[in-house]
Length: 413
Image (cartoon, rainbow, N blue to C red):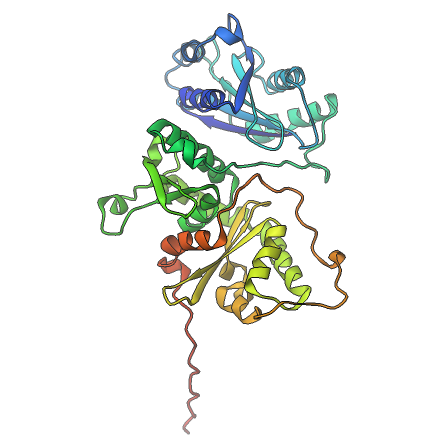
């Protein structure tokens, strides 16, 4: 079991997130601990007021809301009764057993998981400390629960957590502002927290797999100058559709300022996965004496890795991005090394496919076990999307040009 705790300043936002999932048929409220009345008859206001009656007893505490998720191995099929018992035991062990809390079972991923909404303000106005609650309190509780309920241990090699991010449904979302916002919010919130990216271009590379894009506008606009950000749905050809939504309107607050904080953090977080990605690329080349670009892309897709080549108007390749959808990392090719940049790889790719004689499937790096429930856009459409955003980005570099050799100057005595 994996437990994740996110503290916040608005219990209303946490409730909206989960209740919207219920309305969309993607979640079910399975437990309301510390609430009076029948669970099926509680309105949104009933739930909100119960929490707000506590938070108002100590207005000085700004961080007063908790959003917890408990995630289980993909092989475990747990009924609602089991999930109720596990959630209650977990809340007891982390010191929130006497607090009111709501447990929602979500069905928007390939693995069983629940979300828990609660507050750390007690009836007497005192707050339950949250400092290092994940490491000092939640981790020991998680390990005890794994033993008590005979769950697959998170540290074990057998543990498989298939976090599926479902693409936004364009047909349903284009009818109005609220459906559009929900569709975008589900994708943006998941990609923002799960993927490790170090620039807006890399963030968008991950987003566009799920039919969503973040847009700063043109450089001469006031929105760009003020570092504003809006989100659009994308159709199957990569064109923006529907109503744009401001970043500040989402519960997850995917503003440019918040994303920039993650850029710096993700530089370190993605490092452990760099060599694994390089190894996957090398295993593809290992089995071919000559391999075309299309085959190279297809072989990586079998390993849950998306390779996106970017071209200029003349058709010249000038950039390359790798999206590892298992480890949730995004790398520019040049960040992996010169040999994995657009120029380096184009020199290694051929015009025909020539597999190594005698090569068997055992020579390949095993395909990844966890394939997200993703309907990827067609490669050509996906590339066109990224060219627009990443093609003119200074940090991505300019189209590759042949280097001129510098003449050696003779030394004069």
